[in-house]
Amino acid sequence: MSGAATGTDGVVVQVGGLSRSDLVAALREHGVQLNAHAETLLEHPAFDEVVPATLRIVDRSVEDLGLSAGGSLEQVFSAARTQGLELCPATTGPYLRLALMEQSNAPDSVLSAGRAPAGALHVAAEPLSEDDEYPKGFYLRVVDGVVWLRGYRCDDMYVYPSDQRFAFVLPERS
Image (cartoon, rainbow, N blue to C red):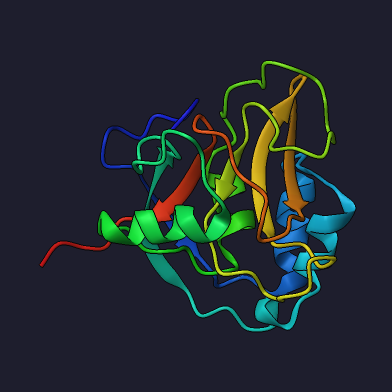
């Protein structure tokens, strides 16, 4: 993963085990900045009681998933499943942010431009709401040395560019 010492098999992340307030405190303690969409997601009932799980997280570009012309969230998720990858639990974003504090700086300083931001790692998870006005999920980004956990919104028609990166769960091999 960009900026993390993870190897080709990803990074192992403990997801869950913290109360919402302890999770937010850990993010603050590490200097992680949140946008309003991330704050909205953190208030969702999914964060009420998160059962701890150990996950191996890998990242793939949209092109790595076979979508050289880009793809919608549904297309990206479907292509990942075809390659044996799983979606992350909806609560993965904050825990992955804490695990990947050494993420590389983004190539630009634009925080919100109505498009997938350069240098971002989107956490592939089922959206917590079908409402296009409610944030779809989290992404990780470092802008001008500031570590961010940001939420994002998009509709079903939005096409992610081929170089956009997503984090998925690599299931344990049996």
